[in-house]
Every structure is written in C-alpha cells, then in structure tokens.
Image (tube, rainbow, N blue to C red; front, top):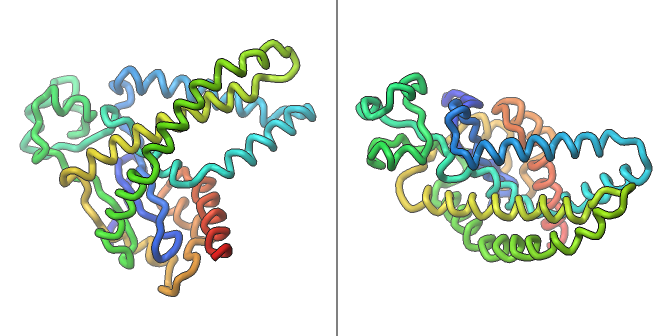
Length: 276
C-alpha cells in the first residue's frame, strides 16, 4: 500500500466529487520558510494580520458585526470551489522542489541541511536541469485515470484565467470607491476589506494558473493511485460521491486543512446535480 504522504511535503491530491469532477488541492508546507522569497514572507505576514482581524470580528458580540460576519460568509459560500483549487497552488518561485541525490553537490553550504529541498527560484540560479528535479506526486483514486485528471486541470486553467483577470481588475478599480465608508467611525469598511480580499484571491488564482501551466508543460507531475482515497468510494454510478463522512475521514487521514473548502465544493456540486 502506498504510504500516506507527509503533511510537510509538496504534493497534489485529486479528491473525487462525482464520477466526472474532482476537488484538486496542492499541499504545500515548505520546510525552509526562513529562506522563502521576500514576496512570500510579505504575503504570509499580510495574511496573518488579516486573519487576526477577521477572528476579532467573528468573536464580536455587537449585532452589527454579527450581521457583517453572516453576510460575508454567505458571499464566500457562493465563490466557486475551483478558485480554492487554483489558490492552493503556490507562487511558482516560492514552490518547494526536491532534487536528485546526484545534484546535491550544487547546493550552497547553507542549504545542505534542507535534505535536497529547494525553492523553485533557486533552480535557475544553481543551474539545476529539470531532469534533476523529482516529479511532484499527484495522488488520486484508482478509479480516476491520469488523462482525465490532466484534462480537468487544463479546463481549470482555460475556464478560469479570463474570469480571474477580469475580477482582479474590477476589484482594484472598486477599492478606491469604498474609501468614504472608512469615514464612518462605528462600522468597519467592509466593502473595501471584501474587495481587497477578493483582489488577493483573484491574484492568487492567477498565480496558481501560471504555476499550473508550468507543471503541465513538462513532466513535473507523477500520478500515483492512493488506496486510502478509494476506501471511501465504492459506487461507480453517476452521482455525488463525496459526503461529510468522507470529507472528515480524508482531511484527518491526510492532515489537509481543506475541510471547509471540500464542504463548499460538495454543497455546490450537489446543487448542480439536483438542478439537472
């Protein structure tokens, strides 16, 4: 049996939603965050600050804040789950790659303790050929063919690029228009914060698409069937395959922080199937 992938490694996992669609997630938890590119460090700090602010808002008992949180959560639940899939792919330059043992001599002394893991941005600088980069595992159910998953990844890119590009532009234009709300001392500038968040999401999705293009062009992915996924699925009949129980089992078994994202994907897919 294929061992459960380490939660600290980089890999892609395809979790079936129906017999023809999947939730595709890139697990990326770099071991060398201290040497991450500057843009990644800035992003991490900004996200942490925003998370603290959001947690304070959700913990507030003021009726106006409770209404705001409820309204924002409803808006977030309408965002297509495909966006969460794209956003899970890191910035290409910040992506962690593992190199073959025969190329370890190319690493700088300060990087010798990384056990062969480096940032994508270092690959070109160290002149490491693609042939010396270990493929990133893409785990999937046995019932899923690699060709079908590849086609879905291509569709993710084709169907979402223009949408996120347009969304990013509209959010960037709309943010300055919300500045008058900042003059109201009692109520936070929710429209401005929301548009800023959506701008960030659109840009992250575009970065994910850019990285996806790179991963699909050459042999950067290695498809591997993961029996642990198949254990939760038994029926091949066209229907919703995923359930709350399956979600709980998978996120616990694989240590994936995507329970809310998968739940949203399940609800949206169920509604789509019921509408047929």
